[in-house]
Image (cartoon, rainbow, N blue to C red):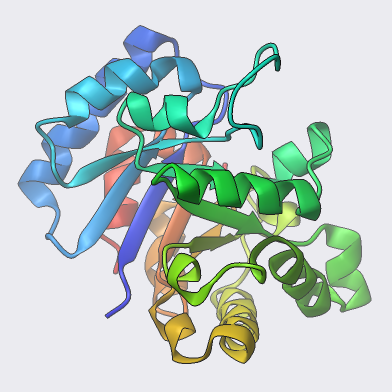
Length: 252
Ligand code: 13P
């Protein structure tokens, strides 16, 4: 059975104190209200990971994620953070290839392939993001575009490593815009992604969790998560309020 996952991506928000408070609130609501079959993940800024990780030690239902890692193992890369450092503070997941990193930090499919490798080597589960810009959606070439992102960053993986990957489909035009993809658009793309993964990895792709991201809220999560290839969400803005975030996690 595919894992149901709701992951928060805090992006560059929250001071350490705010992040700790939000974490405690999420832990409490999850413990009281969430069933065991949903994996909740908090994707915090790197500087919060150690403190948030300590709070999560006694909260087995909530896991810790970083938002990026270097493609290099160690060395003279000022300001960068290695996959090994992330595991050393308790991160289990790392978001890779978010469209904001692709756009503002010029991350390429090739570079992301290296980040995926080093994350896996260090025991991190990549949450690999893909998704098209509005012009591509308007040109009707979104499936080819997204499949190419997956091919170039993931298709070098062995089946054993591929099985560890979580995918997040985030149409760029829906991120932070309040304009969500319709449930039908999300399901259609998720099915195309799964078919593409199946063409390479066969039955293993049936077990891959594919999350939707882009203006996901308590009011629309239920409809979006009803898609048969939609296994949860990667949540930006709504993950900054504990109640909204956990309501989304309760929307299966
Ligand atoms: P929003 O939920 O704020 O649209 O952000 C989505 C996202 O980019 C999560 O990674």
